[in-house]
Length: 352
Image 1 (cartoon, rainbow, N blue to C red):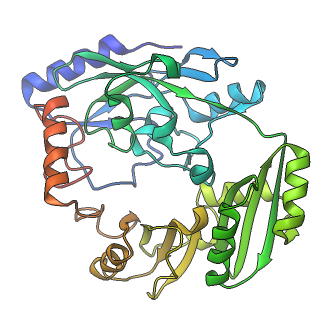
Image 2: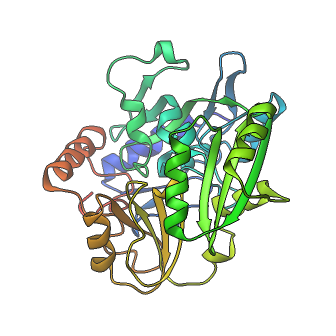
């Protein structure tokens, strides 16, 4: 365990005095995500270690540079897990990077998003002040939920030091089933299952087949399997891991990868390119050289938004443009937490 709070605070104070932008770096596994940013590197990987873990209270507190694999191994020893199944995208992935990027895995619509598991944070603001928000258990989390603002902020609001997260028990049994069907039929089935008491914990449609994972008590999983239908997948865990880590063949190649978020019941989007969807249809992946305007127009018309997840021009609008009022709110938050504009400038949007 290594606490580098003092050294990190000194680095931020010196950067503020010199007007030097800082590029916050954890394990570097998600450097591809977001816009191209500049700044002097501020390394967090050495600020690591699990500070407090209470299996009976279902929470863990760890420093931001702690490797995800270390946290997950510790939880697994007690039959627990991070419920949002954070993507790693590399062995160097850290807890701070997982929350800063705000990405969630296959279980997200059924257990909650990354931000839903954040109980509290300790961070450095742009003045070099150490601030603490939230707590370690739900009963201590009151007032404005500032700690969850950090999920998906890509380090633009502050330097995450420590994080407290809610954890979940591992299910007694998990079973993955697959059946061949069209994308439209798959969306219909997922909508039907959402209104029934099935222990669904992941869904995905790819290559003309619908995959569904059932998780929970053995009796509940087996009963649901008979009603859901499909054939058992020999190594279901490997399938979902490949989707989470984007090692599935769909994600291979250098073509731009778009992530489109829409209401789950949205019909298949009429656009060229390869497609794969997860989360009951709420998260859709598209590969191909399709104009950003075309993709974002389709996403907006469906009541959603689109992100250039990998590849393409990282200097332009990677994230869906915000409405003016919401953009102004983002600017005010940035000004409050980082008045000197030090942290990851331009990583989210060109102006901040």
